[in-house]
Amino acid sequence: MTDIQTAIEFARQNRERFLDELKTFVSMPSVSTSDEHKADVARTAEWVAEQLRSLGMSRVAVMPTGGHPAVYGEWLGAGKKAPTVLIYGHYDVQPVDPLDLWKSDPFEGVLRGEYFFGRGVSDMKGQVLASMKAVESAMSAGKLPVNVKWLIEGEEEVGSKNLGPFIQKHSDLLKADVCLNPDAGMMSADLPTITYGLRGLCYLELRVYGPAKDLHSGLYGGTIHNPAQALTELVAGMHDKNGRITLPGFYDKVRKLTKQERAAFASLPVKDRELLKQTGVKALWGEPAFIPAERVGARPTLEVNGLLSGWTGKGSKTVLPAYAMAKISCRLVPDQTPEDVVRQMKAYLRKNAPKTVRWELDELTHSGWAITDLNSRGVQAMSRALETVWGKKTLFRREGGSIGVVVHLQQYAGVESVLTGFGLPDDDIHSPNERLHLPTWHKGIEALVHFIYNMKV
Ligand code: BES
Ligand code: MN
Image (cartoon, rainbow, N blue to C red; front, side, top):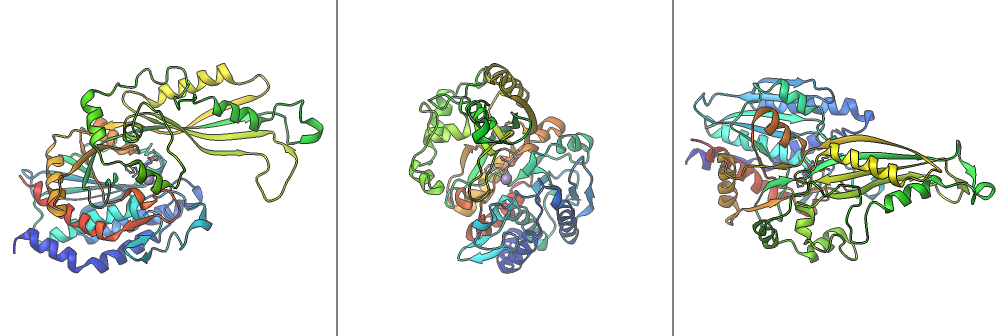
């Protein structure tokens, strides 16, 4: 047997153990956005470091950043002439609420049919573990043909804002020929996918203040501008009837799609029917001049992520609230920047906010858009690996999510990423009952094994 066959056989023999390990990983509530989980996040970083040590990695360290720690490890035994693959992952997860919609404990990891359920199973603890298990499988077969480095961070789900400076500071340590980033999913279980574009993000919090305190809505209603109303009027005005964003200058830097790009989007198997099924909506929405794949991959958006004001408990309370708040985020495309959007939002608010209220705006987090190099060795190695396992041509697409590290690595370390992953569009990432399709996960581990051998010079 060749090393690669031995490695694949090892992966197949150990599927059950791999899943047990995923269950342990998922049981740690590493929610990066809430202080409440800080200790859990730290404990998860330690667990990741322990996994890297047991893989035989050296220089394993839980390294401080300005926020949650990042985990590093390396194995450079393939020598200076062999390529070095930096494997990226994030061990943090999104919050679980609304908790009552989960059919099982989000931090238990429960098997139902072909799916494994739990927060982070798909995004992206399952993908991190898949990378570890692919390396373990290859190491079991003999000496690895490539050097590997690991960067597993704990702040991706809050925008990786401390990772840029971290990469800058440790750019020598993180030097690599390519970064494997399995955080970008695939188009469907039978469509092996490499993602070459991601949108950026600018996440804002808008607060509107009216009266000094909550008031009786009968005694004051009609004389005072309700901040909830003022806020929602402002928010409603941020789109026009055609779904275009009205912030002044918002589209100025948005690149026009070329004929070729539009043809590429049109050829992707994105079906309206599938989108309706995945989301449960009555009808799709968005700019009529663009098809859904373009609207997700190459057009910017403005979304309300949350609204808060007044009485939201059970029953009624006749109150005129003192305060209203909206969380608003924009997904950005080339060549927009988060700074532009903050400025444009402020200009919009200055122009449109009524004199009756006071407003405040904060930027909570941001992330740059990314386009990755499709001609890199890494992309070719991955494309062949996926085709070997799936027996189908690899699809190349631009996706609408954001992954901060991709730009940081380009900017501060000159490293290009290969974006792939084995999460599916209906995995319900960030939603209740997040799940991982196990047959796809197992194929993914095998594809990563092939990738490692394909990278060999
Ligand atoms: N893995 C996702 C992003 C993703 C999903 C990319 C599917 C491509 C396909 C990532 O973990 C994520 O959700 N990122 C956040 C980042 C944000 C907080 C800056 C996002 O996009 O909301
Ligand atoms: Mn995510």
